[in-house]
Length: 231
Length: 231
DNA sequence: CGCGGCTTTGATGTTCATCAAGTAAAGTGG
DNA sequence: CCACTTTACTTGATGAACATCAAAGCCGCG
Image (tube, rainbow over all chains, first blue to last red; front, side, top):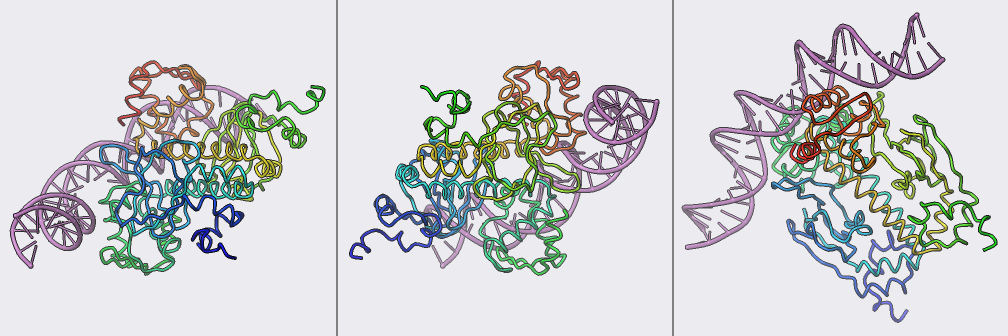
């Protein structure tokens, strides 16, 4: 096709096949003009709590955290979002301003699409609307399940859970570098920094994991799974 | 109009104006045939965890609880849903089976619409799709905010929060009958039954509330608000 | 009328947050 | 590049908050 190169890079982006599966190349073209990619270095803020919502943002590459600044410097991490996760998915259709912040915890590239264009597409393309509903449903569901899971566990169980999460859901291997500080782990699973450290040390002494700074290796996965389930 | 009476009762239902605002009478008619209302006495189960999802359910009148059966008889209440809340809204588009249960905590009437019909409508009516997205977004958002709010509070703060919630959000008055047991309050805000009772008693002794069985009256609202915020 | 679930209070113990103090690591300005 | 400052990490000691256990009264329901 002659105009292929002109449409936009979305066409070959893996993201497209995941979300924009039912969107034709023509339709894609209409809002790809307004689309832009933006790179954020680890630590940089992608979205600031209170910012007006005018765009639809998703992670193309990297890792970000969504968090709530509750005052007195106390932060709560709502979730960690991976590639193809939609940062704005939870508020974007009901609010005018973000009520959480997003920052990169690894070098990250996000795609930014004008929200009005997305809404137009929803109006015009029913299959896309359904895909978006499904996606949103899944996102909310996972989040709720996560909260419930964590709330039932004691501190050892929570640390076990989060370590397994990194190993099995994010990095897909048993040795990885933690993308977050001990303090951030604490904010993610609702405990204090000191206890995160203490329990990681306990696990190390018990031979369940090996620690070298940010580097973690899981040595006894069955034990970790047991702790995650039964504590 | 001649066919008015034949369309279906949805036409005059207050729910319609809230969600089906952008749905024409004709469109409404196409799936109103499959719609049914069902009454549940207080205590009855509306949806059972594990049930296949084939319908879209919302509360027309009454009050229900969404809860998770985590095993060992331990239940976690996810939320309490009021009229016009969509029970299925969180999972219905991404899952084939419910992973929570729903039961009536007051006499309740729900409306049940075939899910496929809803999906058809989403495909055909873009404005309806957007309304649904907004609705879902709002539901998920409120839920997340709720979790975060509660997690930051100590037990006294949680009880204060939940009492204010009943007074200001659900019953819109300072004297009301609790629709839930002490045990259920505990399951809702993550604490033990004994401590719910203990703290309610403390509040009573401190003159903040009056208790008579299930009946609660808030006597010192500013104090309760202070506790909810600062504890 | 008796049984099971809900409610209440008290006593006890565990878990966890807080405080304190020190080391290591990472940024910052001269 | 090095002194300096700040931020992250670590460990121990202490106390408070909270769960658990136990016992008894209450209420509704079959």
